[in-house]
Length: 196
Image (cartoon, rainbow, N blue to C red; front, side, top):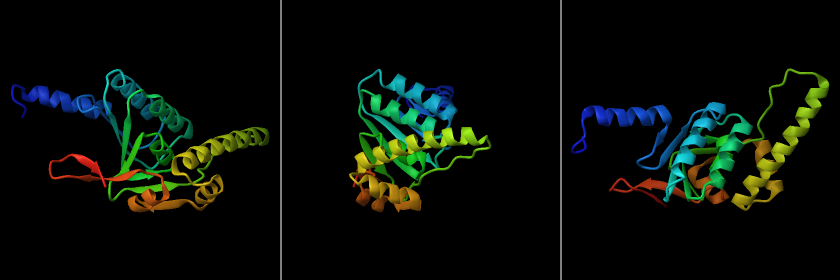
């Protein structure tokens, strides 16, 4: 226990981190689980608070994906941050989370993390006209996702489209080779993370 801190102080601090998924002392946001309106809101609030002060912000990311619109809101919030944002992927970094990863100024994955990109899907129960309109919108969104993945990886748009269509999986070393990340996070003896 930290010197001068009571058990209630220490517990209260950890309870706050668990509740908000943000560690304001270490300037770290934990974005785990489904990407949805709630996670997007919590994330944006935490990032906005941390971005008021100077210093790197770390995002620990582990997600199978989720709602594209909410994921793009997170992507935009990261890109608009005035501080450098380091994203470290743990476990699954898939679907929309793979796009969010591209927002980081420094993109790292843990050695055992998995990265996956695909073209997503729409679950629609609607009329034919609304289906056509939704299809046009999905085309625009897909175009933007291809642009993001292509710009950050250096791969051509045609290559990205093929990878999305095939639902492509990578381990951390393959994601590094493909240009989707900048390095592999490994733990040093001192407990600091560094890139390989």
